[in-house]
Length: 105
Image (cartoon, rainbow, N blue to C red; front, side, top):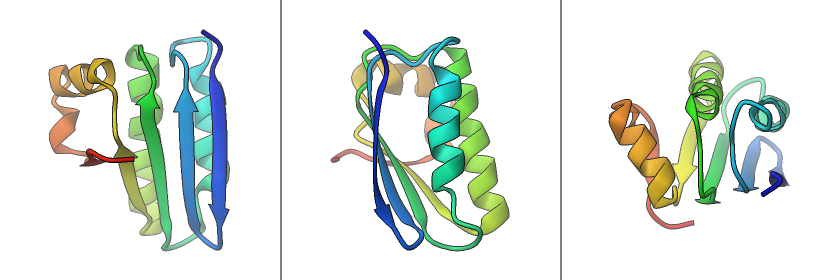
């Protein structure tokens, strides 16, 4: 399943909706979307993961990179509605306690 990314928002507040598998080959595309959405200071970036049936460690690393960038700029970084598969990966890596996770989209 090819990765589809829809980015909406502006003025420092973005929602990135992700659909498809996030793996070694597609994670650079997600990384680019998060990096471009990251405001210079403040604001928020929400990554909606409800449409992601599979995520490997490179996808998790991409989310961690986004989280670190957000910390540096004082930006709120939120994962919204992660699928069961994504939530399982986050729990196994114990990152579910690090990220701000919203159940609804």
